[in-house]
Length: 443
Image (cartoon, rainbow, N blue to C red; front, side, top):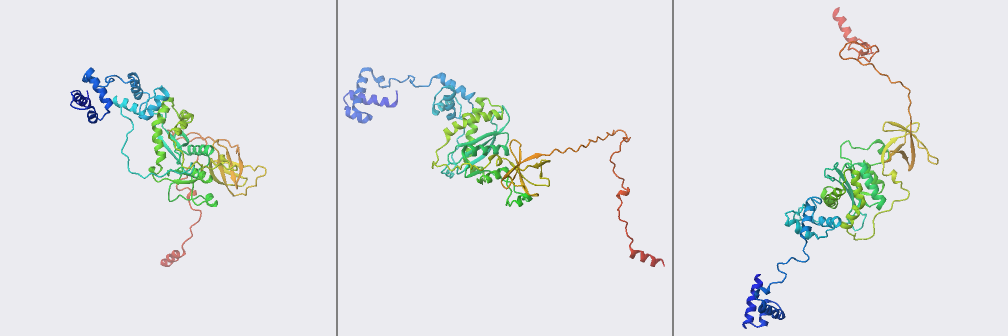
């Protein structure tokens, strides 16, 4: 019996002996008079043991069965290892049909000596930047290299575009590393599915901003086009779409996307493990088949202003000629340009103006390797020139280094130091002053 129940036995015994009234006993024990009469009758009939609750020692009807507890402990150590308590409770209900609250999962695992893999450090005083009021006002983009496949395949980098107002994943994909093609595809998916955002927030990676060097100056073609500072290919795409590009000076400045990467490294790793993904293609398949939707439904928040700040893509923009690789070239006589060591001829479509010679043109290399030339808003196709020189390939005979014999055919020779070709072609003129002084001294 508990100490409270023992105290009640003493008070009720005094009531039975007539030393206390029922009203006084109710006031002392802090219960109602009706309950005092009930306890008094139970004490008379069954003794002091009757004051204990009838369910004491019994297993509660809503208690978690032992086999379920053992199953949860086994799954937490094998199939769902390194999952925090909240995520584990969600996975148990979704895949195993075991519906337990995070607190119940926490009690089961702690009693089995399995701590949470997530370390809860004391919060640091930090003034959070308020979210943007509208979706599309600021989009954070970044990449996270991590062992997403847990050794089943190569290490991948997750590229992510996150809305600052809602925390919603707008676009995401796996790549082998952070490269131009990955961010090109990420921004293309962002613009085609949601629209053009007002600003993009990124780190100072060389894919976004060129490195600061003393010799980092504009090329002649860029100077002729009136550019004031060099742009990377990603910076050029954002500039052509009218998107403000804001650099972050530290990882803490873009903490929302960094926090999202922390959550994804806990949850997405388990999803990839359950799907058995072993390469980049399978990882992207898992990412785009329901995971992003479940993540947004779980973690996204509604914006303060329901009006979206995303701009629709103008009808006159040809996105395939914006999301491409561009370089400047000069139009040579014959309407040819040099690109990647090859010569291409510019074809003028009907209705397009003729490009003046020596003009600076843009060479567009599309993702499918097609090449075009752009000038004053017009697009011109290119034709590869086949240069058949009909020169026979000359093969020189091999010289055996172990013998000093010369081959039959003549080989290029290095002239000797006293060869006539090495002598100056101008005959030195005599010094008349020196010659006159010599004759005078002789006479």
